[in-house]
Length: 136
Image (cartoon, rainbow, N blue to C red; front, side, top):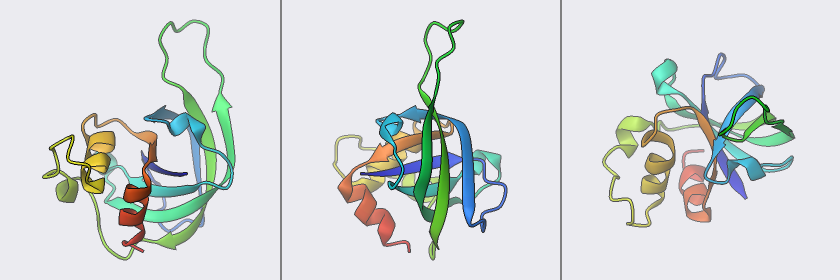
């Protein structure tokens, strides 16, 4: 299974990315070591969208806090970069794909990342994985 993460990225050319306590949605909490991750630099935090593909080297669930009633599952992961994106893909390119039931990989990514603009880790379909692979 493959995943995608949208987060603040300090160094887009880093060989390792450390994501601590990341919010998970749409199956993101199932991430494990060995999974493929597509890394998006959050545009609301100065990033440019898709920047890298990597492999998870470590994944650990963050324990839920007892003082919070409803809480989104969070994980901490380490990602070893395996490739840098050769073409751009960000909010502007995905925004036109808003017919939520059309089955297109662009629509899936737009829905999961940009319908709610928060940073998050999500599971993606095989079709979305193949679509993103074309950017490398």
